[in-house]
Length: 214
Image (cartoon, rainbow, N blue to C red; front, side):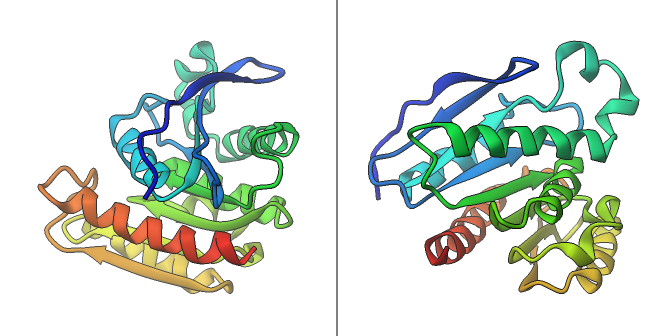
């Protein structure tokens, strides 16, 4: 495992969307985060996941998918096509950035961010090597699901019953390598003791398997 990695501030142009990039020595790949509605690059749960991925020598990029003005508009918060286009801009940034250009890319989406991640994976199959959804709404990317080729892991809390069913339906539409993992005793946000650690273990294993194959 690598030691602590300091994240640096970056901007995704042309909108100047702020982000946090952390690249460990001899990185195995990079994970781009797509946060859920009402969240940002400063999401404490995603930050915890990112630190654990850094320790496994996976680079991470957390960034704001919307400007502050856009984030105040609830229609844009749930505009999956818009959010996916912002992820595509970040994918292009990763390709052009000297420290990340050669790294295989995974997407980690939470809530509505999971739908955006799957839509972006369908649009840019040549760039996305793996997808992980945490408490996500992959059903909101319904039109894109059958075009996703990146191996996809869906993680849902056992007590998040409605979202479990939505994930099961989305899983049936995916034709890529796929798996649904249900974390015992967890609610939607994985706030119960030890449940986020289980998410981290599942996501880390998935990314390490499929990013290193790329």
